[in-house]
Image 1: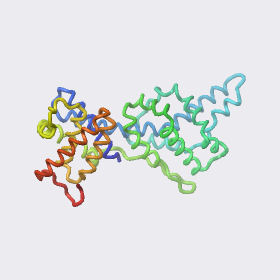
Image 2: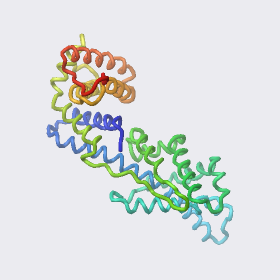
Image 3: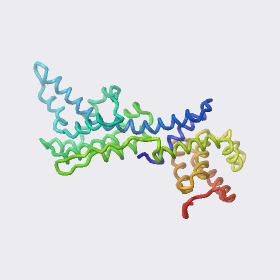
Image 4: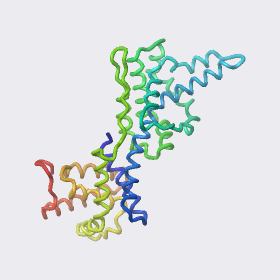
Length: 310
């Protein structure tokens, strides 16, 4: 399940696409939004196969060295770290059996595998793992968990490489990492592979994004008029595009999402503003949000579904 924060970001990106386009068919952008959300899960599946790809790279290196007339035993040993980690293969097999599995193209990262492998070998937890000649399932699980954590949370080169493959990686990373942390569970000599379910059109977060997008597009002109009433000396056409779109999304949540607290909406879009607009936008957007809230509450146009939601 993806977070509402990520849904808001994907909706903002789709709204920006709509704003820059001459296309007027809402269904085109609804499909684009759903595609953006689905791509989050697709890349999670792609990333889940990283240990297997690294393992295969190392096995290929060993095979090449073994077939030399004078094989270098130290090189063969260097690339043998993942030989005794069958859990990596079990995760790969679970991916192959997944309904949405496609043959993921890792070719763009092939040239960096040696660097990734060398980095992995340099970490202390890897040195500890290498002492186990036949690591049990729990030890393998902990090693794979640490591998993902170290690469995703601490390795800039790895993250930059992923961004080259998926420009939305830094947006999608929290979801992918959270689900990867749940990939396996061990009970004695049994292991369960837990692949996150695919994203469906009727999922709560998907429906939220669809409503956010449609309500914002359909009310875009009236929102601009409303924003114009609280921005002294500022014509909406002079407000930075991203700031204006964020304000419109805020208005949609104020007026059409009774189950979302006002403070949640404001805090979420302020955080998004910090990451997706200009350095000075946050203060400006915060001020306009507050004026809009006061104005709409004064007219009793904001109706939340439960006490304490303001």
